[in-house]
Amino acid sequence: MKYSVGDIVKIKTWEEMKKECPLNKRGDILTKHFTFDKDRERILQNQNTDRTITVTEILPYSYRVKETQALVWTDDMIECLAEKYVEPIPIETRFEILDL
Image (cartoon, rainbow, N blue to C red):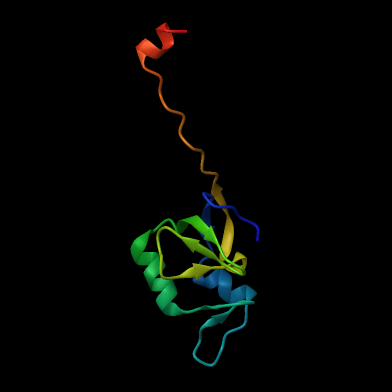
């Protein structure tokens, strides 16, 4: 598994996936462990147009993500790391700074 919990990743386009993976008889894209079907593509397009998702859980061959809880995604479907999640640092109040 290439990515970690909190990583924001970008999903490949349908056309990119078709170039890399074979199609089944229904026209769905076959990856190593799962099928990338037109319903998955439609859900992704409806939920976020920039094709980015946030990894929330790492499963044996896939990732569960915040944006599409019912769907899992695999390394074959992910184009790249969009950005690394960084836990925000709490802002200190003026009083906390003065107490130093």
